[in-house]
Amino acid sequence: DAKTTQPTSMDCAEGRAANLPCNHSTISGNEYVYWYRQIHSQGPQYIIHGLKNNETNEMASLIITEDRKSSTLILPHATLRDTAVYYCIVRAVNNDMRFGAGTRLTVKP
Amino acid sequence: GAVVSQHPSWVICKSGTSVKIECRSLDFQATTMFWYRQFPKQSLMLMATSNEGSKATYEQGVEKDKFLINHASLTLSTLTVTSAHPEDSSFYICSAKITRTFTEAFFGQGTRLTVV
Image (cartoon, rainbow over all chains, first blue to last red; front, side):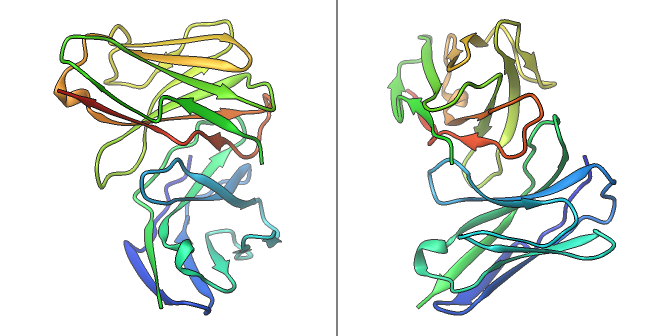
């Protein structure tokens, strides 16, 4: 699976949109982009995934660039409970889910 | 989303004893379950992949005789840490996928193991 690069940490003001970037320049055509988050001492929580089209659900939006070499996870109105480590994972269907270092997002009042 | 439950949430055991951790898919059948280990301030590391009815596939560097994995049914996988030592203290997390061509995986809440 392609490697991903994410910033180590980010801050966001409560109520504002949180935009978390992810670079995956070696992504191949059959690989999806997944986002999970992990709140302290809990198991990872699925957020969203996509192949090439932008996706939106009740939690977040996923914007994938046209060349698919990068993506952005958007939390439209961040709350304090969104403070977590966010993982961007690129993988093909049927491959294992492997985690990188992720981005530690801190939402501040 | 689908629910994956781990038990126990935390356990303390004496060095040299064995500990079993259960992972259950509560509302779906999981053909494959994954076991991860996470040390403090580090990311999740995949330990092994468990397929129902067959032997688990272990990642390089993970001792299969120490971390026994059983996936006897489509809703239950167990991880047994045998002859536990303090260095085995960690956060163990399982995940499960619904079908053979799955999209997202669902994770348990994790088990905090402390070996004293």
